[in-house]
Length: 114
Length: 111
Image (tube, rainbow over all chains, first blue to last red):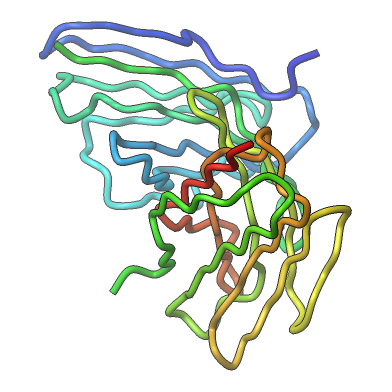
């Protein structure tokens, strides 16, 4: 069973379109995240939710809107896609505190904006 | 100054040698330190975490932490070609649960 699953894995779309990436975890974790990895492989946090509540919101354009219907799901909706949004988006989950715990990453969603 | 800094590499070592990967961090409030491995086209996977000064060993891997110098390292003994990947250093600051990553060091182990 996949612990953190995200769909779609690959997405090619045109500038200006709106798209969503879905994420689900079956680990019973309280906290979920969205990370973005750019072309230089730099992995940076975007959002974090704890029990459906937004707790981390980094400096991200408001075209990006996360939604957490329940603690097992965290979706990412992107409006008016731009070329610079092309990246790999990783969903992840962990327990409330990550002091010594593991953040589990999904397999990533490769977004290409043309 | 980036919060977590790593040499991008590539670090090239022969099979069987010790690979030494280094990482420095800027925030003295950082409490937990992680090493992730990422193969090309794959997601990061945790290798080790450490939060006390000193060494922590797990199989062929040893993490070393020196909070006074704000330095954390990962040693890989008996390096294998399958260890070839990008190694990401990450830290968590006290009171936060977000992982802040360095840009990663690419390791190449050649036969």
